[in-house]
Image (tube, rainbow, N blue to C red):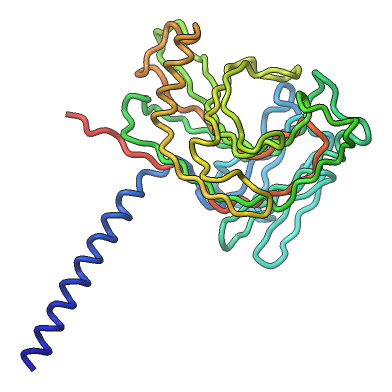
Length: 321
């Protein structure tokens, strides 16, 4: 009996040690969630077709219900020909779908997965996009209203799990021009100066993780001015090269899982932009995150759908003494 008790005690010690190690790993991967309504339970504020003339909410989409809570999430459909506000809604199994000609957004009310579908062929018809012509977007976005400065973060972990269900190039070889035609899945956050006494107050730039670009094996990093169409913001865009967070090229039909501490890259982006002559009157303690978005931009005639299973932004702050 003593021998049996001794064996049980040893086993108990191993179980406790294993549990402690497991808890340590879980704690290391958690933090404060930056996103509100993480599971999309409160629905969406739908924006219009133009970021200049109809950027306000035109319809509240809350799964056919009347809720007393304001949605945290927005749906942007800039540059589109057809409006989700004029579309249909339906519930089928665990999925609730908003759809109109050329696009759809479906939410799994059980798992919180989101499926975005954009058929740009409905927008362009048989004539591919020309230089300077706007292109359709389908984005999930959220504003932060954050007052946490860049110099206060210990880390900012972004985790994204998604699968491209299909990606179809509807242009012929003669029609396709690589420099102006592509399909992109993008993740962006805005970095904004909010210091009341700074000459740069209100100015911001786009910090991005390009998830997919039809033209490249890995989406490339770049710095440029947001342009190419009349409704462009004119702000600087800074994106990280996909090889920094992908172990293999993103492939249609294969689940992609990204986990990256973006803080070092955000700090590098701010330094690089200052060296290039931007934000000359700004310091790290002036800068905060203003908003985020994730989804499609489609400057080419492509039909595609992707399922977003996870989009998380978790952070911890430095200990202040």
